[in-house]
Length: 136
Length: 180
Image (cartoon, rainbow over all chains, first blue to last red; front, side):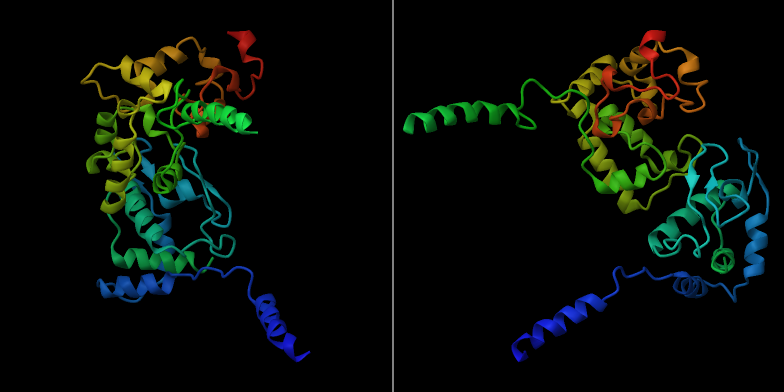
């Protein structure tokens, strides 16, 4: 028996290992970074208001907001208002991949802020939006 | 036994030459399939990841300029500089005019004037001609297709770089070949 002890211990370790390590939610980390760039405390409520704010653009579609492509129910996939591209749900409660990739967060904030409101978002706005989305 | 081995060797040499990805003859049909995960991921995240062999290098250079990416057919498709340069390099070094072992790429290059740099694949004369006989109801007015830019909605093996007529399946019109 003794000579199998090592093998048995090893097998037990392998069997109890979690099958797939879920990636970390990076919202706190991103918010800390935004604060180091000058943002203050974050508010989910402000984030929600910002998310729903409508903006005028010079080109079609003339009225743009986060909701116009992500939809109003963030637990459901959205559809890009111009291209029809399907956008996976934003709510981390239904889409575990949300906010687990810093590069992706940075990339899409830059693209979507510029497209939707015509400029990059401030660190405060980004932190507020993440605070709001992370409650979903 | 010795003769058998000799025979097998003689047979094996030319076949291995034929199958060679670059020295192969006859040349490959279609365009070269994608080989760069960064490109496939970054561009394929939003649209069909068009193979670099569908446009000449001068077109890719224009498309991938920072200002051009900011307004990429109406969308903001900015990339961080490191990714932009890596993708640009992949596109230009595998562009249609740097490819000579894939037939479609050669035809694309030949259809273009030397200084012509279309930004849309659908504006390449060869591609345009190939699709000119298709009625609007099959593509633009077909709600399941909408535009020629969605290659893979009809070309069932577009992701493999294969665009032969026999592998076209127009959504809603399986019998398209009898209709036009």
